[in-house]
Length: 201
Image 1 (cartoon, rainbow, N blue to C red):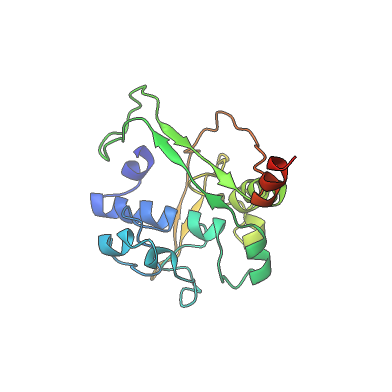
Image 2: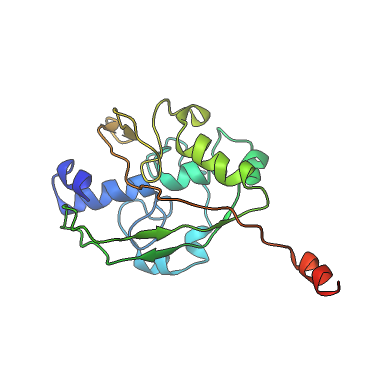
């Protein structure tokens, strides 16, 4: 990614910044379980790599507060009541399309690529719309000020991303919106009991 390359001094530093923005390494390993380096074995374990909390990372030095996974699923972060966090859960099933861009490529080659995002929930306005409007694009609900989700947020001119670190906090500026939404639709999926009822009509 162009922004990563322009704001880091090495491939290793770039990988770290990218991981901090997402909250996971490229393999899928979460930062709270592997803070210093990627762990491919952990990333491939679909049970372990989703079975974690943010306890023990109250200062956000492992996984920044503004990282994508921490914003979209705060889990047990102290700024949230657990029941509030659970109200906004969705099941995600997405499919990517197009060629993968090699890490060293920073210019747009004009090829179509992206992701068909699919989210399933019992309440579209209380989950999908809420997540996009509040948790992705409004930092106030998580004491992040004007910061937006670095991956799916619609960035303003400042484009901030804060990375807690020792001895000083690192603050990156000038983030651009990474994802462009081309369109979408809401579909109703009947429950199993509803399908059974329909079949008996």
